[in-house]
Amino acid sequence: MRKLLSANFSRLWKDKLFWLCMGAMLIYSVVYMLNGCRQATIGLSEYNYSIDKYYFHFAVIIGVFCALFSSMFLGTEYSDGTIRNKIVVGHTKTNIYITNLITSFAATLLMMLVWLIGALVAIPALGVWKMGVPNLLAYLLIAVMFEAALSAIFTLVCMQSTNKASTVAISMLLFFGLMIIASMTYNTLGEPEMTRDVQITTNGIEMSDPTPNPNYISGVKRTIYEFFVDFLPTGQGLQMWQLKIGNSVRMLLSSIVITILTTLGGIFVFKRKDLN
Image (cartoon, rainbow, N blue to C red; front, side, top):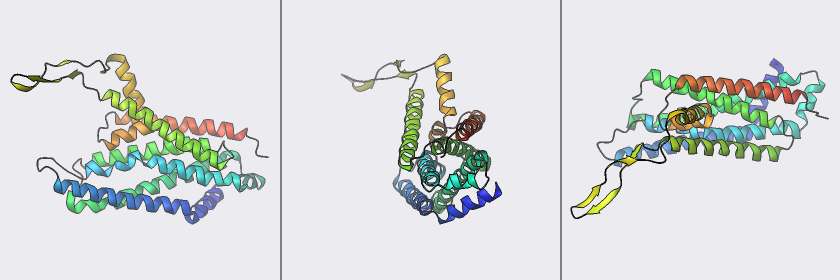
């Protein structure tokens, strides 16, 4: 496996798409954080602006880069016949699959690292993290784990499809589908239990008495929705972006379960795939 990893990383450092993704993440982080600094400068004085508000925006976009890079990088192995050559020289399909997963995961982590470094440009204007070092490390650990889950999902897709164009399309559609599902579920959970309407009376504009919100979900259904948002990597990313992470242990365990199950399933299918 060491030779496979060495070959993969040697190709990674020469991969133009990888460096384009790294550059895009760096530029995006700097521009986004500087825009955050501008908002803090012209914003309301009573609003408590901090770097925390902007620092974790990468959590909702890292999946796009993971899907794109994984599908292009791993898809090339099929189009160039690299996988077949690796098997011919004696490497097992299991080792090939695992090394490709490790490569995809490592590339995604490097993209996140570039964002984190570039985002430090906001410290002079916004200061350091008000959440504290323990919470910051907890957030980053959750990010690392849901990126592992995303890498495992996209590796599963990439290692089963022999057409690179189809692989890219499927991976991107899968990510956006997971993001839409997570967003809809998260927004549903954000519905208030009570609502108040604006009324125009002889005394002017007044608020009506609170009334139950028909869109509010409670009980077992709410518990299921909360579990679902915590389970999905995209749901974890949304919560991290909003700085509203609740059950961090459930998130970590969910990412571990997704990574293990998709990897085992991917290896099982890949070992039975005819590469001739």
